[in-house]
Image (cartoon, rainbow, N blue to C red; front, top):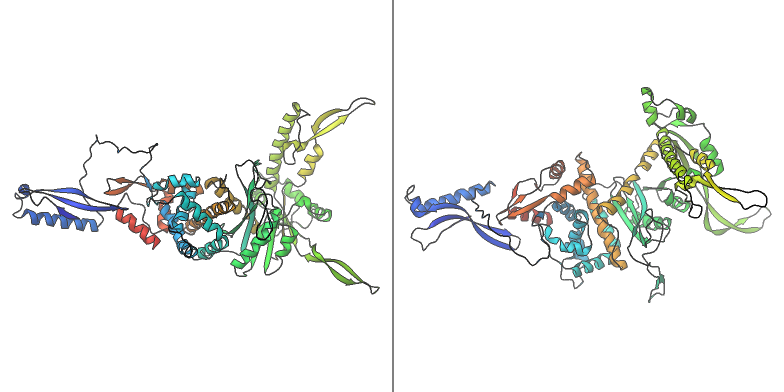
Length: 619
């Protein structure tokens, strides 16, 4: 701060003047009036010296982060007229600085510097990716929509839509390098637990009229399959899809991903991506964990070699008759908690209202069954017969595995509760069922309805619909049972505990689709679609790292709690003098400030203070 007065005036008024730098804008303001020269003569013989002493006091106050100032407010002053069609908020978000801290620790700035060094790019692709990633978490929108709201962030970055597209092309061209870089640098932020790698797939739909056509590569002559194709979707979206395969570690943090056509069998994606993952992990041992749809015999065989193992869910209905008989044979079952022998019949019928049975009700029974399977290797070998002749036979390998069967009384009651509600809905359908529109679905309530045709000799058959009790009885046999196949020698309790964490990868997809708005996708080219999911993946990685840091600090919040807090952390510009917080210091905010040394819990911020925080993050 400095002294400001009119040196030509005979009776000047002395002011405390302060300079402000707000981004690229520099301004000075009189923040306090010391007094007129004639007024100060009443209290001092040297008004100029007195005024300079006051300036020194103000500078000392500023060093202690406390400034006294006078602000004049004109309640008749009008808002400046702009040419914008719609009025916009002047609040600026600073909550993204927590995300920026993690983004910078991933060293993506140096990555983009390396891959763009030999190009003619004149803009900074890292800035583009940085704010596209933050926007995916805080304000999910199209790329154009994100561009229009860049002014909502404190830094107010400036780049064009063309810069976004060129950055996405650059990212897609370095897809594998990008994912490997993220994994390697994430290990510097937290210790990654890759002892168990969970895998799953999900589909993302596109609002287009027709799927992509296959085309021939002009150089190699290879037929390239179109990216967006019709396929299976849990949401039954009648739209072309792209499939994402995702690996995550034991903490629910993503490791790597792959993208394939929506019509591809998801089982064909597991082994190629796992090979890339193994290279990233530099040959470390891992346990592959997935659901039954991604646990084919080939996948199990692949994870029986090279220090790998597998834990996959197993459909009891698809077991052989011999193994099914072993499942329903009420012998050799033990309690999971104590290994005490237990009968499934007794387990189904004990009185759960008795307080002493509460622990038993929450427990599970289990049994281990050996279930080795022969795998056709796809080629022939010569075998010498007893008579001395040589014959070519199919070469087979044995996949050694065991199936752990569990039974839960609580799960049995839950499944029966759901089925009874479906049966009641089926009964309602029977009252007004139209034979012409009746369609039977394998997982719909209509699976409990069957057609019954009756006729008299020489007369036309009459169709009627009744409940199919045999289907109901068959389903009830499996209530409460659950199976996991593995080649590990660990305890059943440990294996089941590992398998139970598969829900975290489902949650990863839920966060990307629901919270980050990863679908529907509006891009057209394979490169831009790939880059879109790379941005979504980066956002997921950063967010999971943030959650992990909170967990390590023994604080846990929902995804919605964290995102809402970051969105609400906004400041308002007070006449370019300072910024005032418009958010409250919540539990989430307090926890974030405890982890990151950003001190974003103040009522007021000087522009130079916020600028300094950003420089410290990005240095």
